[in-house]
Amino acid sequence: FALLDLGRADEGEATLRAVLARRPDHAAAALALAGSLQRRQDDSSPAYRRYLTLEPADAEGWNAHGLALQTTDPIAPAADAFARALRLDPTMAEAMTNLGTVRRLQGLPAESAELQRRALDLRPGYAAAHTNLALALQDLGDDAGAEQEFAQALEADPAQALARFNRAILRLRQGRLEEGWEDYAVRFDSGRLKPRRPFNIPEWNGDDLGGRRLLLWAEQGLGDELMFGALLPEALARFPRTIVECEPRLVPLFQRSFPGTLVRAPSRRPADADCHLPFGSLPRLLWKTAPVPPPPVGWLKPDPAQVAAWRSRLTALGPGLRVGIAWTSQRVTTERRQAYTALEDWAPLLRLHGLQAVSLQYDGREEEIAAVESRLGLRIHRWPDLDQIADLDGTAALMANLDLAVTVASSAGEMAAALGTPVWRLGRRDWTQLGTAVRPWFPSMRCIQPEGGEGVGGAIPKACQMLARLSQGDL
Image (cartoon, rainbow, N blue to C red):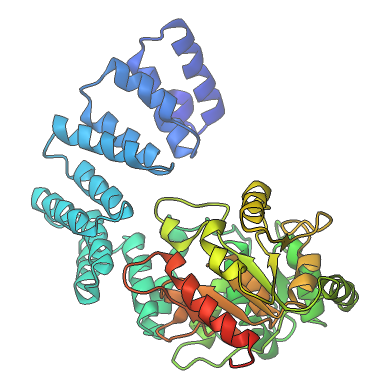
């Protein structure tokens, strides 16, 4: 225990495992090991199961186990753990709000809202329950009620970064940009995104640089990097001598796109910059009010030689519209499942006459593709010598030759749109539209939404109708 308290987690966990090897019934050691693993975001479930076998009446243990399980998918076991905690202690507000959160993720916002209200009855002013109630109300379409709950969460706990972050998403979705970007500044503290990179230089607050050299650095995943990267052309024009640090795979593309700018992979302790700013903070400086200035179409520049080579390969496919498709993500959780599809859902589109389908599904999905090809008797084109994860320069050259890309919310769609390729994005309205019918980051992107309560697959028939008109020259 002392080793864990000193921050020496590896040694502490090794010692606890040695204790458990000698004394399998040592409940305190099992609980301490589970807690340490959970803090390090390692798999703590086996340790919690051992502890709860020894101490099955510990409501707090079941609640902690539920929190550990909630990071996995499916999340039904987490709901069972929280429910078990409540059976043992019906007054545990933490387990009540946690169960409510899981119910919302399971698509039960009304039940979630009721559980959050019960948690607030148990503990008035409970900031986490106000935040979780706000999220349930948003799902129920009550944005005004949600904003009230976020305000109450922040009144109860001004440091509740999760409430401010989610209020930012609400306000940005409504097009309230200045307020939204102000709240979005807490994103790194919210627990919803990757941690902020540590720096030995201060963050720039937007004042006059006065000769100081600025470092702009990419945050979050590849799709977000390309979305926020849409503001780089304006930022680099306003702030000369800026250094850009991006995902290593994007360095050749960014160097080509921003000649005269020092572009490199992330450095550990930059010695050539005086202040820094993450990409996601650029809109707070440059997009304060709507309508926002559209970024240049095709600001991301592929390699001309590779573009020519891929033009020859795609021409060899024969006549017809060359349409790239991306239908899912590497990481499909319960919370995100409604945003993705199976390739089988795309059968009506794939069967359209005069269409050459090209896979932009960067993680391969060979078995899924082969099964659909066999059943439909058609070909979805992909090339074994192109690794769409590792070789972004080659992937960009392929995308630049497409007539169209049709994608779900995916980094493939963001890259194609950044290149200026026409993109149809299938999905529900989200905050990245900034209160508009489009996504202002990408002038070549069009949003196609499903009807009513349908999942994103419900947008595919609309895309089929539009593609049929496009192939006839009517769109």
